[in-house]
Length: 211
Image (cartoon, rainbow, N blue to C red; front, side, top):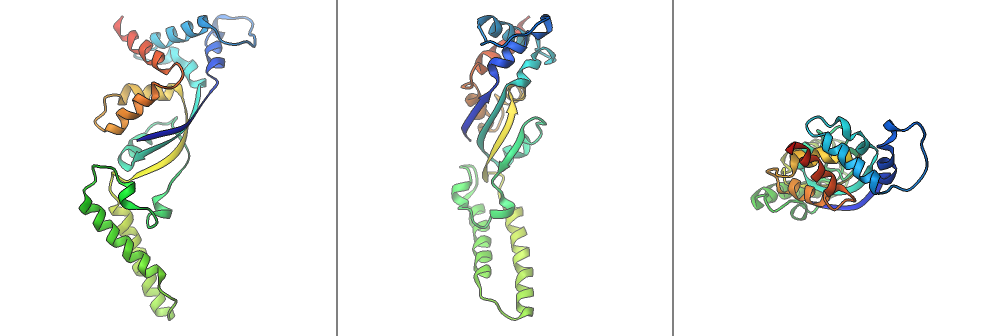
């Protein structure tokens, strides 16, 4: 798991906005300790239902992350974890360095099998043009080989994507994944704690369960 190019937006503004429900007038200013305290208290009060932590939705986060195919399948379940764009096996699977892209848990024998198919695909693709009949047969072989490569690419194959989300979604991910069986989810959650105020938010949430 690699997390990089992280950008956090509107943390101060959302902290200030967390107090709007009790105001008759609003003002433009910098956030202060009072805003932080109120925001964390609202997170604490959200334990078990999440309703009081609505202000977290305003804190936008963009980042690049490298996950295995297995983790990506699980990540796609989060409605507010949105893809900006990502690397693609559909378009570039025969161009990747398979050994470099696979994590340590992929059996080398599996990589060898897929690599053999990739090598054959690239070999056939490099052949010169021939008669129409030969070209048609070659295309059928290439199409079949490409599908074999796609469907045999292991779950430990890693791809990088840029995502956009918010602190509320990331808190939900942390709650569900910080002790997950997949090490990359645990690593991701550790990295989340480095985001501005996020460690305090996590602490406040779990403190809400100690009432």
